[in-house]
Amino acid sequence: MPIYTYRCPVCGINQEVIQGMNECHTATCSCGKLMGRIWDIPRLGGDMPTRGVDYNHFDPVSGRHITTKSEWDRAKRDTGRIDYVPDTALEAANNEAKYISEHSKPGDREADKAGHKVMKEAHQKKTAERSEKVSQAAKKEVLKELRSYDF
Image (cartoon, rainbow, N blue to C red; front, side, top):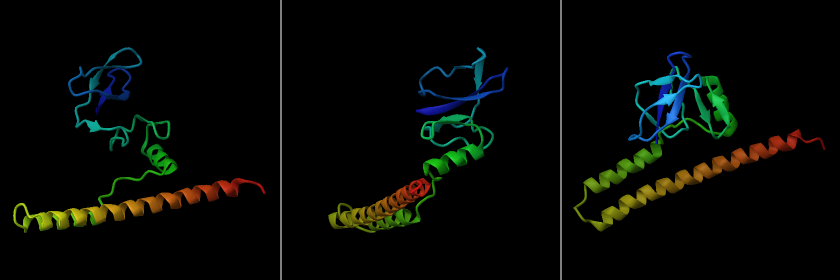
């Protein structure tokens, strides 16, 4: 569902509201006034705050209300999240699969299998890398916790 941003004309407080595209786009401030919608591109999901002036949202993962970029960075660090970075290996595999598809005869099953195999191998490699990163992060947390004990 899209997340829309509203601003109170009296308080100047920004508020993000999750609303369906067909719902009535209104919001009421805590002071009781009707808020005006800030016209921008609605965001989908609730994980990333808008870049720029407004960082006013509740982060359900960390359980904190985020109002500044430094709070957002701290919440990301504390929960182990990272910013999205396009994966060049998956892009290369996708381009290779497209090339195979474009340069083969229509309905060529062997070419389709080869394209699928390239993508499957790239995803399996990425999944293995992710699970390795997660296990390393878990090991670090356990070591950190063990160091805090007094033996």
